[in-house]
Length: 349
Ligand code: 26A
Image (cartoon, protein in one colour):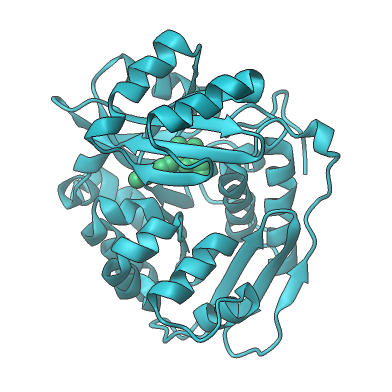
């Protein structure tokens, strides 16, 4: 097999530093959800009332600081499975001690980041409250919300774009800079590169539908979980919300680059992953890599890890079945760690 091209995978989204508390103090966590009016299983943007949460987590709940941001988790995951210098990640960060922590974390993971550094805004924050298998994520984007097209078009960044063969966009970026997403989408279609998008969260499909739809013709791979598939069906008025039907619908939406058949993937927690290919009626099912529930530490970021493994396979030009399996392998590793991370010393696929 041909060696993997340096920085062949380019990812874009919102770098965040996570403050995570998990189950250890189950009662405390329930109370915390109530205090800030958060659902046990959700991912939302912070409102005014949520802002004190971040200090509260650090001061009163012994929260751990963890590198986060969904696509940055996937980028670290893909790099985990690939030769050194395979992945580069773009997003907006501040010039503060929190961005320094992020830099250290990604350096340890071997991930190259090119942040747009905002001199005034704080690095983005995410409160992660884990109760059982639920995770409540509350994000204050800060500097991540200021990513812009100017950064993407800087000659040294654009060179990275032109060099890459695979683009991965976390759907959470639809809240930030749709023009940057579209720029990468068009670059992919023009040069027959792979454009991979994750739907990220139900609220993206509710409130950012027009941007999602504008990018749809460019999707070569579209990834979502069962709740995102249902949210897509709801916001688009589909007859069926069954993931088996939604995945076929997604695969067969109109497509710009006819040289690649679209692949749509819907994960369903411990249930089999569903895969539909454009033009094919049958939905393929791939069982997850089973794990003893006692071994599960934290399912936050399982979907990000899945995307990371899948992306590593796509970049290496592996068959689709292998790409899916690589995603499930990495997800299984990640849920045994605290937060969206991967075990060291490294394990080999
Ligand atoms: C714009 N929003 C809400 C977000 C996020 C986010 N990453 C980017 N943008 N909200 C939560 N996350 C990340 O999702 C991961 C789990 O899938 C969290 O940082 C968490 O690591």
